Length: 504
Image (cartoon, rainbow, N blue to C red):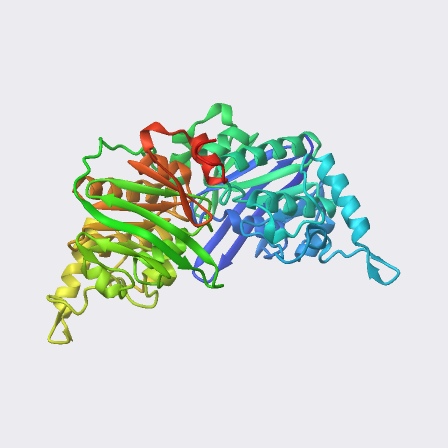
C-alpha cells in the first residue's frame, strides 16, 4: 500500500518531559489508523508536530515519499493535511460558509464571494455524505453537525490526510455511529485518517491499524482482528487492567439528597437548569447522562454552593441547603469531585499534604485554636497516600508535578477520608488513563456499598451504564427521563440525549 505520511525518529522534549522519544509512525492511503494511548502518552504532541503546531527537536516527516518541512499549520495544509481538534475551531455567530472560508477567503470584485463558497460546500458535503447547510449559523447546529462542518472545512482546503483528535468526546452514540460511517466513506474515496482516542471499543470498531503509545514511545502496532480490549489496555498501561466494573445489586436506603424544581442561569444569564427535580438514596448511584453543555455543570455547581439558583430547593436529609456557602454544604456531609480538577479541586502550587486538608484544615487535629498542626497534617498525608495509592515521591511535592490520574486520586482521598453521606462525582475520569479509571470506578462502587449516596455526572455513556443503578438523562437543562439502569439500552439513552421524547 502507498505510504502518504512517514514520521521517522521524532523526538520532542518540553521542560522536564520527554513527550516523544524517537517515535516512528506511518499512514497508508485510504487507511483509518488509530493512535491509542493514555493521557500524557505523547499522541497529541506527535499529531501537533505532523500538523505544524510544534517543531520536533529531531526526526523528519515525509509526505508521499518526499521530505516535508512542516513549520506551521499553513505548511501542513499545503501538504494536504487537515486537523479536526477536540474543541472545534468554529465561530458560532458565523454561517457554515463563512466558517469554511475563514483564512482561505474567496473574493470577487473586492467582496467575499459567499455564493461560490456555499456552492462548493454543498458539492463537497454531498460528495462525501456530510450533509450541511452552508447558510445555517454554526451556533444553532447540533454538536455532531458542527463536527461535519470542521471536516468539510478541511476537505475544502483539499486535505487528503485528516487528523481527528478525540472526535467522539462530545457526541451521542448515534452521532458517533454517523461519524464512523462518514470516516469509512472518506477512506473508500482515498482520504487517509489518523484517529486519536482513548476509547478501546471505538478503535476496534473503526480502525484498519492501531498504534499504541506509552510514556512517549510507540509500544506496538496491531490490527483489530489480532487483538481485543484487554490486550490494548495492557499495552497502554503496561499491566493487566480490569475493564468491567464489578458490582452487586444496590440496596437503597433513606433519601439523602432531594432536589425540587431547581432553576439555574448560566454565565450568559440564560436558563441552563429548568425545573429539575430528583432524589438520591443511601447505597445507590444515580447517573446523570447527557451530552456536555446541557446544564450538568450548572446543576453540580448549584448543589455544591458554587452557583446561586434562581428557584427551587435542595435538601440534605431533613436540612435545607439551598444557596448555602460551599463550606456549609461540605459540613453537612457532601463530598465533591469537581469537573475541572485543576481549577476547582486543587491548589496546584500547594504540596500534596496541604491539598489533602483543604476542607478540614481549620478542624482538629489539623487546626487547633487557629494554628496548623504539622505532625497531624504529615501523618494524615502519609496514610492517605498509602491508602489511595497516590504515586508521589513525597507528601511535600507541589501537586502540579503529579500526573492527572494522581491529582484525581488526591481529590478522591481528601473527599472520601472524612465522614460523608453524599458523593457528587462530576466527570470523575475525564482525561485519565485506563489504569486510573479502573481505580476511580472501584472507589465509587466501594462508597456505594458502604451506604453513601452517589450522584455521578458523566459524558461517557459507558461509564454511566457501568456504574449507575438509576439513570437520569439531561437535555437542554431538563431531566427528560429517569430509568432503572438494568432496563435501558445504550440506543435508548442516546436518543434521549439527542432530544427524542421518552414516549416516542
